[in-house]
Image (cartoon, rainbow, N blue to C red; front, side, top):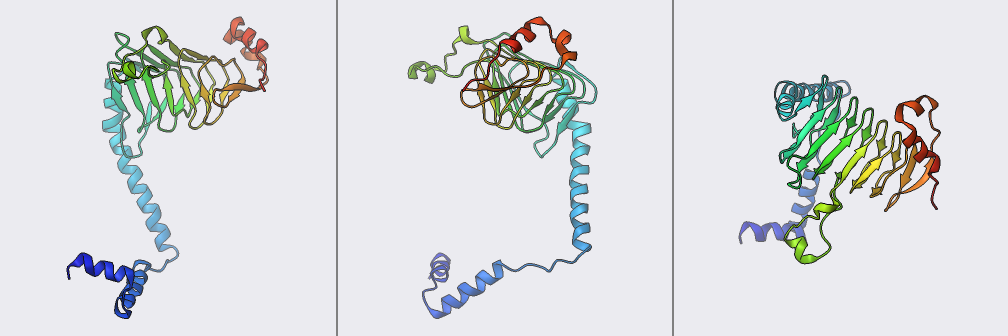
Length: 258
């Protein structure tokens, strides 16, 4: 009898002997050391401090300078959330301009498609990308200042062709490549998606798991797939002059949809 046959007999508890071994094995798997108040609390805190200190060491001296080397411009106080990968995945010849106090999760992906000669990514000041996000750029993706972007995907193209032969050949509908423009103060919640030639107005909120494939007016809440306006937010009077008459007109004309 080989080892595999023995293990199977124990698992099946085929005889009283194997049944005892089965019970002993289960008890052994459930064993644990007793919790000692104070001591294990200290060990937990020490482990957390050690991991964070080690990650910060590599983030400051290695990963963030490497990321900066790939940017056309990158402002002060740039921060990568280091969860283990260290640096976002970068692919393609992307022109990146990053503002000040920008934060991005290290498990994100920034991919430049080959449609434009050099696709462009612009991120404004004090914008937070706090979870993994894939940004696919055929032409340009622009994210404003003071935004919280929890999207799963941002892409300035509508995706693959509907014709299966062209899809297999990975042919891109160049005429449908546009720009994604996300204005200031936007909150895009967890797992939301923005695709296509889309403008998201100032102060808009994109609900979790919403799929945005058309323009979102300023200070409106959109939800669903496809995303639709479900609510208008109060428009701060101090921002009327800042964002311009066109965006304010779009806000006035916007109506919640049932």
